[in-house]
Length: 126
Image (cartoon, rainbow, N blue to C red; front, side, top):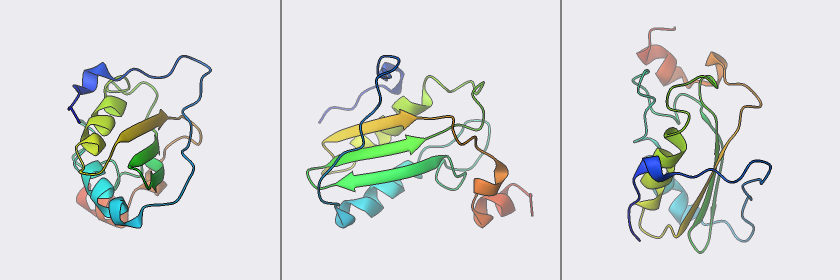
């Protein structure tokens, strides 16, 4: 599997949804995928996207198909175009992953309540 530059991410054509995969879950692949997601950081906030609560849904299926539904802290986020590609690249690098589907959503909107306690502590919010 080749690595793709995260600026190569091409969202599906407008109105065409990113499909959530069907089939059997792959619990053995879930933790490595989560670890890969933890390597992706919002460049303005020194916390990974998992702890920030930006990942709304993660599906890992046998056959190496991964679906990530995520958001950003704001639709005006300067990395709105590049972050989904960075997520795709990080997850694609996990051995056993064959396909990554990233669905960027804005509903429900992100808020600080979605952050983990660790992230809030690291950012001095508690």
